[in-house]
Image (cartoon, rainbow, N blue to C red; front, side, top):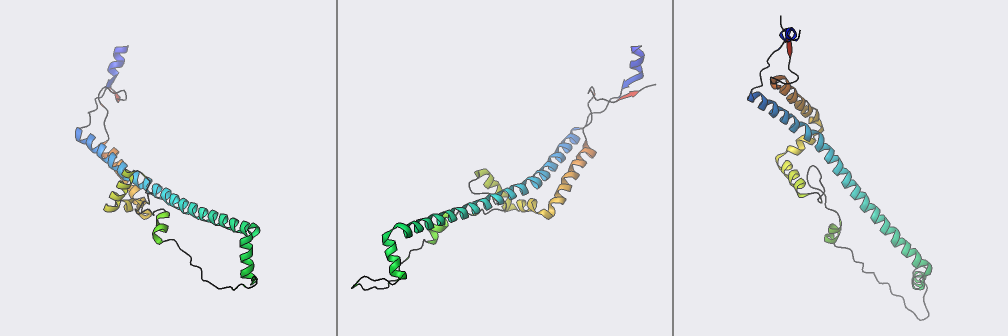
Length: 197
């Protein structure tokens, strides 16, 4: 019975894929990934870096406002409790003078911070097309510079080209499977069996 069944179903040998087909399949699959991954990942990185830069700007604005609030609190406290400040305000606003006192108007010399010190206190603006912050790892900044020098980064973050690049990646993957799909080896569990007469 078993011998008759084994004659009835015989394994049809499936030839193994040639080496060139396997290499081309692997190459097309890798090219598809090399087009797909940056097309998806680089715009996300740029958006993340834009949000980081906006967060830094808002943090500086909040700190400036906090400093202003603290300065005004100090002024208010001085207006309420400091007798010297109250006396000076009376002299200025009410034109108060002590007996035999002569008041002379003097233009105050006010010092402003130098542009260099102000620039040093501000965070440096990112310079690359991905807007990576300067505190990121050196390899990431070097990769950004490399992509900017060759124009590759702008290609992948351009929203108008994103659909074209995604279709190209899909086409490469379809071509890999249609033209160079690996065939089963003889003895594989999924080997095709055909009924023989």
